[in-house]
Image 1 (cartoon, helix red, strand yellow):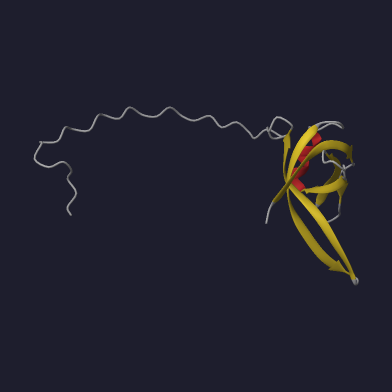
Image 2 (cartoon, rainbow, N blue to C red; image 1 turned 180 degrees about the vertical axis):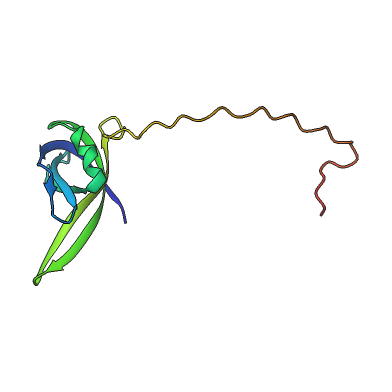
Length: 122
């Protein structure tokens, strides 16, 4: 299940690198509700690049999943951010541009003989 939350970036933490090659980066946004909340999100691996383009005070829309786990009898919940859009609805990290090759010229279909409206066999 996917969720989203809108707010302003309050704090961006440094990236954490682990010996296994795993890396993550946390950030906090302040919601714009009647009673604002500070909510911490985690971006993992390639998703950390989206945070690098943000600054404190930027308005963002964060799309995230909720992850839970147990460790040594304690239970933990993470808000795993998988997409971070700037206030204007644009992704914080623009996707790589893809240039499409021009389409080839296609000759027009031959006109029907007029016997049948369509040439379906049924």
